[in-house]
Image 1: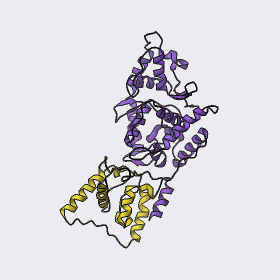
Image 2 (image 1 turned 180 degrees about the vertical axis):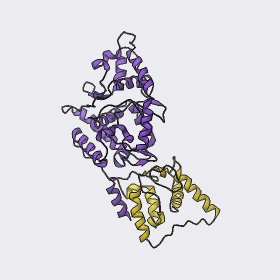
Image 3 (image 1 turned 90 degrees about the vertical axis):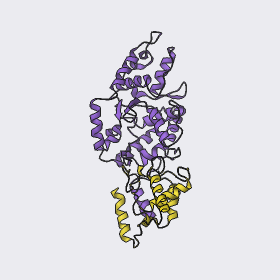
Image 4 (image 1 turned 135 degrees about the vertical axis):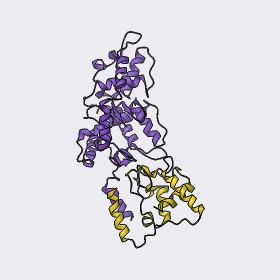
Length: 120
Length: 278
């Protein structure tokens, strides 16, 4: 965990834009955010905690980088979506499951997860 | 950004790739060297203790559990079954070298007559059938207990699985097992090596992932989460199901070959089964 934190903190310091405050304008958006959170945490769905630290989750694994400062790391939403859809496109040896390519999550579910993860 | 993460991944060994095929002996050396380098502070023989080699807290709980071993009943039952003669008057002892005691270190072996890998569990059932008895179910129960007893009599013996140089079919079986270990499968797209090589020692949820070397030494194993003692193939079934792949049958060619490769990767380790695991 700490080995990921150092470069992340450096990035944060170097970044002029800290735009990570989530704003839920309407109750519809809040519902979607809640569903995205559920999908992220559910063992049978995203199960992101198996490998990633996620704020608000318990018993997180440390196999992969913690999901923090996501807006800073992914200013381009589509890059994050592509990473979740099939991480092997970027790094062929990744152990991250291809959530879209293998239909672990539906396209709609991936969008909900992406929106939630970007608030982290 | 991407560069930063690639550098981190390389530095932590996440990009460790499959070793090229170089024959069983070199594979074994490469595998043992890899883990020694990955865990310079872990004594090599500790890898036979799975995640308890690296996780102090889990190790303490495990040692406490071993004070009153939950597999002891299975060993006693197994001894009873083992010593009960078949209807024809023969017994298990008649089927094996050294009366079936202290022999597990030689399993699995490649049988050149059938050109198949023979595991200890398979040999137990072959013994029954040769003596006119019905084979026992593989995943749990009587056969597991017999296997546990035979493992118990073999504790401390050094695993010595052979892949004969002069038999290309034996090498092919070994290579098939190795291929299985490194092949991604299931909806979640994991190979055995994805976890046990690439991210070994890191934690999946709260559980540190164990090394390939030393992985088979302690079977059959009593798992707390299962509440019973089970064979290595039951663990294979579980692993395959967890990555949402369709598991193979216990004692299928696929799992026998996998056991062949995996046990070869523990050559030189002492048997320490049966054992308890989370």
